[in-house]
Length: 327
Image (cartoon, rainbow, N blue to C red; front, side):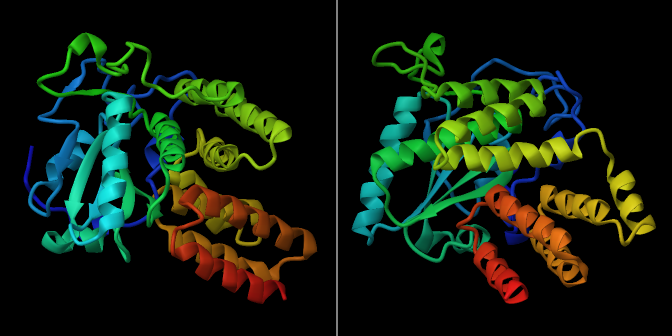
């Protein structure tokens, strides 16, 4: 492992979904075309502890761990009492999940590069790293039930990237890695039936089945925020599946007036972490369209907001630009 600290640019942006785009239906996470291009490895990852101190100097090692196990990043400060309380909650949850996550605590005053990289504006700020790519989770303090729900959503997103390993500390029993040590039951949270079916379909690369399951979940509970986000994420993957970068970009260049071709380029940009490019492309297309085309662009933007995360700072700016174009 290296000790090279990451640059801000290397951590900024949406989760990079591009490595999953061309995974054939039925390919298992970790197979060729999945992140890392290696065969799945069920061997638990040995770590000094499930709770690590992340620093500007050692975060390269934590990024490497995130290829196998999702990492929750807690940017905190010893002068923030709410932050200290949240850290205790996160440590408790990481223990409950028993190896499904690693928690990296980052002291903001001592690690300015990581503060900049994660765009932390307040303390505490909580993010995740999945397959070396960042996911903004939330800022400020949330309760334990809300934090547990966030952990569940991170597990779903990690499965889309083939990051499904477990970590084990030296004093843990390898036979219980990935299980709750208090009752030897699986640490994986109990998901609603449609979420579970969608999760399993994503692991198989069967995005169409996952879409059906998320839609079924929303039919029974329209306010299911996890289903809304999951549907947006897997719909993006389904649209890009089987298409190469060159096919998408050449098709759009050859047909500049073909709205569907241009929408695919925006999908491709966002899947590779070029969020501003994707949003700018769609907004620049908007004034030239008829009513149906404008509505299609509006719906696609709302969907991409869910993929990026509605709390991403680029989303409200783009919403404001879209509203100005609409009204």
